[in-house]
Length: 110
Length: 117
Image 1 (tube, each protein chain N blue to C red):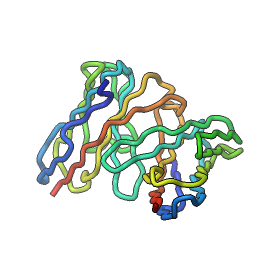
Image 2 (cartoon, one colour):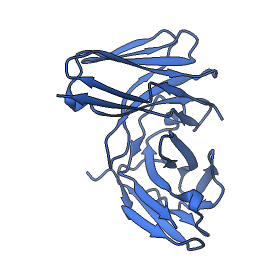
Image 3 (tube, helix red, strand yellow):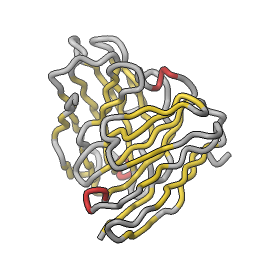
Image 4 (tube, chains in turn yellow, orange):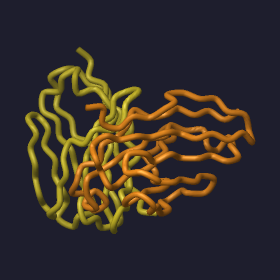
């Protein structure tokens, strides 16, 4: 089993603050995905990063894949209450094997 | 467009009972997946299917069975429910094999919350 550790596990911040969530592993992944999950719903894909060192931006969210393809980070600028949710990273290793991280539960307080 | 639908939404089982979790997708996806999500843990793959009539084990298949008789449906069967199977179960589908390589999109259903007492 390839383990993906996310940190922090819980994060509560004020609206307008910046934050970074980390996803780390000792394993190499062919690609890495970030999902957001809201209560009572399934995860929804935010982004996929494939190349080591790749940076992708989605409005106020910036995703980075580590050079060695073992880790990733998600940075949110000027967080808004709508960003509240569970953020999951998932690494792909081999066909049809997607390993999910433990998740970061973000709360943005208005 | 309904996407991926799951029934039931909630269920309580007694130890030793059996049940089937239903999953249907209307996107004509070849690939379908079952995950379980335990509190404070990430999702773990139980079984997956690459097309009608073809299924394979994921990371945590023990205690579960699946079948795939049509492209649309991928039911998950629990034969002898145990407290360790208390979890939230998610079904997902994707268009291509690339979802397994992380470069395609998996679409998730809303989940079934199962409690085994």
